[in-house]
Image (cartoon, rainbow, N blue to C red; front, side, top):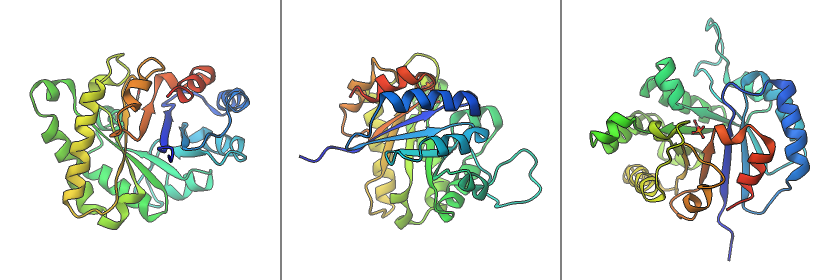
Length: 250
Ligand code: PGA
């Protein structure tokens, strides 16, 4: 029986500059080896991309991605980083629309869709995050929020391109809070996302990761659900031994 491919994505957020990232990888690469069906994705801060890409060059099971990009290729956008720049630094993927970008920095659904389309055009794999807040979930609006977030993406991404992107379902109330969605809750929203995209005539089966307080204790039950194609992890991904344990567990 073929092994189901699983993606373990590490979102380092604003942690691990170039020197610390190199120390992390030195240890992590020493204690892990490539495993069939397992793909390891790292999203370091932009300044660490080149060092991380260089450090993992001999590991085809590892993908390196940026945490954010601008949709324009160059120009007067102080503080922003472009797709060609992160590509030059070795990124082949990019995180788009993380809830911290949406909620702390005011990124809109439409900006997320523009970034996603730009990344696909440039040949990078976007990992697009969606998810509801606690108030939205408690108000029974989870489905409406997910559909609202997906709508501009469905406008801007051609049906044939959906197979090249990955979606992450990250309920905002579960991020960094220690509170995880149950495997059932996560699977239900994954199915909603899959159904919504398929209904628009998208032929590919979309890869969908779950994120929000994933740790070595809860990852086996989450990944036991076939609706999940992997996990996107923040806090539990910044220590090499802990991350090696988590990716070796399910
Ligand atoms: P967390 O973060 O694992 O620390 O909850 C997940 C994320 O923000 O991607």
